[in-house]
Amino acid sequence: MSPECSEGCDREALSRLLYSRRTNATSTTISEVSDSGNPDDATLLAQLDVSDERADAWSQLLAVSDEFAALQDAEGDFRWEPGKTGLDGVITMGYPIYGERVAVACNALERVGAVTTASVNVRVCDE
Image 1 (cartoon, helix red, strand yellow):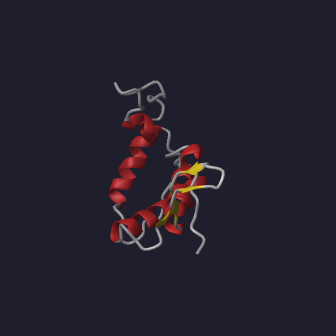
Image 2 (cartoon, rainbow, N blue to C red):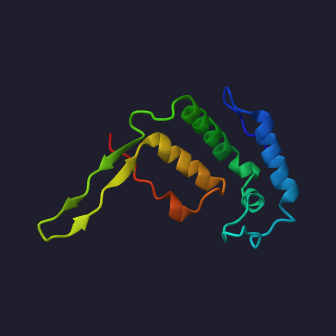
């Protein structure tokens, strides 16, 4: 796979990541965990989907990462929905509602296998 890098993308680092993922995939298993019980870096990298079918997701991820690098806290990345207490006494905790740029990043991370669907439940701002 050879995803397109947007301007400022570190093509060499991306190539090293993808090469190391391909060469280590057969020797790395999910059972490799750190002392904390979490998968180690090699295991996580081995689980990334670098197939040609995911080239568009990698391109999206690289583009949005460049956007975040250029402007880390853009207006509209999220808004906070405040907590409230209903008439029946039910308390709803406050929570963030994310903007389109965050949703694009989360979607691309899911598509390349970097996160699971359960951790990508992003509510997008109604703008």
